[in-house]
Length: 97
Image 1 (cartoon, rainbow, N blue to C red):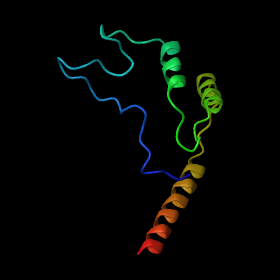
Image 2 (cartoon, one colour; image 1 turned 120 degrees about the vertical axis):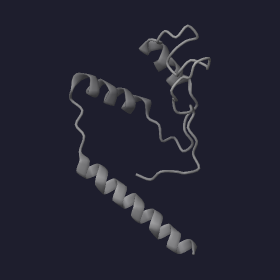
Image 3 (cartoon, rainbow, N blue to C red; image 1 turned 30 degrees about the vertical axis):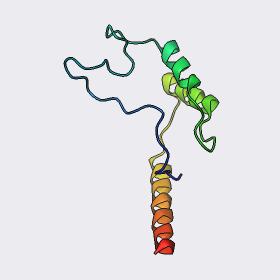
């Protein structure tokens, strides 16, 4: 898995709300939490990521697996992917120099 530094997120990360500031993500002006259907509709209305890396069906399947307790995290696969990414980044820096 490679991380594209030039890609930007469609939504900024949520920050803690300060007194007198705008409501946090997932809440409306009155501060009540949006339901899952509203948030899901917002996500589905977002434009596709450049390169088509977003698979809505895959995300929905993973979400269902997490809710049902079937999702398993494989730390060794994550570690291997991170190491491969670092190797790729280091290799590309050597070629650029």
